[in-house]
Length: 204
Image (cartoon, rainbow, N blue to C red; front, top):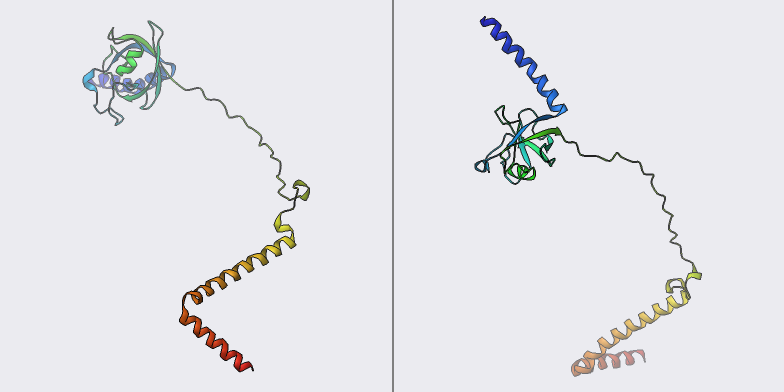
């Protein structure tokens, strides 16, 4: 008798995971409750802290992180929640919702309501191949017809005249800078005159 009891428990443990997995794939129906306010801030099974304003839930069989669509069977309201905790550990309820999710389903006033639970997979638009567009090549060449006058860098005469004008300005600026000390310093001006007289005498 004792061996039969052990075999029965062992067989139940082997069959139970397959039964639960088939239920979770097809969906599940039962009563839904919600977390009490004193659970706010407590650690959940996935390592996060419970927040009553987040759309989370506790379930026994769905993997942590699974997205579920929970529908209130009495009024047709739906909510999308994420499995973050384990529970409820009673046969009366199949899921524990956060307070925010229960408010969306209008369960707060009643305490619990019958719901249906199905895994939620957001609709994804399949990838559509888009052929690359061909852009025309830009012609960066210069055409004299596009402008009334050719640019300065293409006219040699204008370029050289401007170069000569700039050199003349530099020479005038240098001469002015040398002339100013002679005008202000009389000793320097006399020394320069003596040097000039000596050079003129040496040439003679």
